[in-house]
Length: 358
Image (cartoon, rainbow, N blue to C red; front, side, top):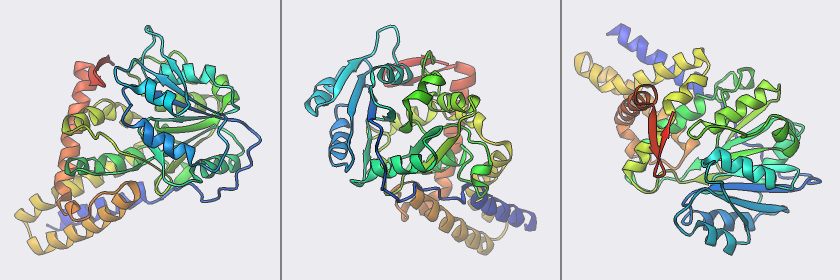
């Protein structure tokens, strides 16, 4: 029993180790804007999401030079919605589909000196959101690639299952551990990316990335290969999105499509910590049945408190449902295993009506 107790404590401390740094964007919004800002939005069947994003852009207290929407073969009203809000709409080439190709095409058409890539399902939570991001980038000398992970807006019960994925996603890119920026970044967050147009062109940006590749991680690797820094932040209070609103099937497809591949960029030491944290959270009830319920109850309460704190950092997850957190972790482990099967055995995934070969 004491061995299991030590294991639980180690798992709990591992959680603080791998995700102990909050890493929010500094609140300074006094951005000096001598540069022109181009916003590039790759979109495929995003007619329902674009209005919220555009309204948040219209409310910003900063001059936006241009907004480009790159329509990646949409079959809904994506193009019409974007044009209604005054955006310039370009269509991806039929022989070059996919998000990476759309980003590259948008960057080639952009005339600004700063490029802000945004997913169509994101939205800024404050009128100073873009100013805050640009100011943070300027404080880094306008160098490298800056990326913000949006805050997850949760509405339906099944969406609660994304909690563990959100934490592991951020922890897995190495910059939210207690070691901070002393650990090499593993990649970037795809929904929000900021860089200078010059740097993007010099590292070849998203050029010639294959369909299905993790474009956010691949882009970060290109910046790092060119000795350019990566700056990662959490988007709480600044930028939000709602992941997989179309149902449980979409949630499974979304988290399955690249999670096993993304795990390859995690620092090995931090990966051990993440694994320990996952095992500890998923085994408490089983071990309690075998040994001591009172001790298991105390451990349960301690882990529950940690999960409530972590959940507040990544999204609007309900604390009453988090009482079932071992089920969340078991779901994560099952879906991670399925992602590995899809990635390394079947070598294909399905996303947005496309079968993508890996």
